[in-house]
Amino acid sequence: MIRLGAGRLNRIVAVGAHCDDIAIGAGGTLLTLCRAHPGLRVDALVLSGGGSEREQEERAALAAFCPGADLGLTVHKLPDGRLPAHWDEAKGAVEELRATTEPDLVLAPRTDDAHQDHRGLAKLMTTAFRDHLVLGYEIVKWDGDLGRPSAYQPLAPEIAEEKVRLLQEHYPSQQHRPWYDREAFLGLARIRGIESNARYAEAFAVTKLTLDLGE
Image 1 (cartoon, rainbow, N blue to C red):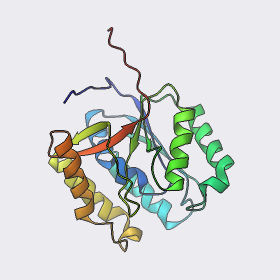
Image 2: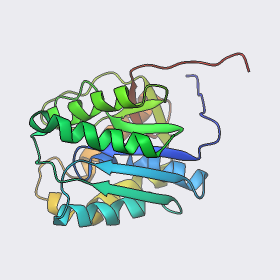
Image 3: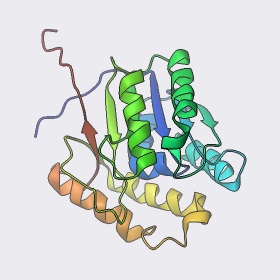
């Protein structure tokens, strides 16, 4: 298992189609990054949930998942499950974000995610952020669309536990969902940990990666 680092990180972008997507898919990675890089700038964008209790949950959650970071969060009001019908609005939100930041890393949904909102946002991100490292996070769901990831971020056991605790603490509106529980989140993290020679990990898809091996 080869481990590559991204060097010093100053700015990252994290996007989700829905409130809680970022935390579920990359919450452990955010905790790891923010603790390793105090003062890291995190520009977060969520396409749906604006003006509702979901936005309140998201703001509190991302503040907890990004300790010590300079966090900026924008939550839009696109209807859940209708991104294809609101393509221009979604594209405008992503382009507005792109115009304001030059990140070292982008965290986004996977381009092959079965959910149309996740998949649509992922395609917008790889177009808008063409010269950036874009890591596509995974979200477990009934579709059974988990595949073979190409990149892993190992999580210290305490980070994995904190991720689960924060998910349960900050998103009470999701507690009724049958898949939203400790076993699901830690179980997937354990499987990805086995695959990456770690106890726990989060896994990502990489659509395109440019290497610089000459320095």
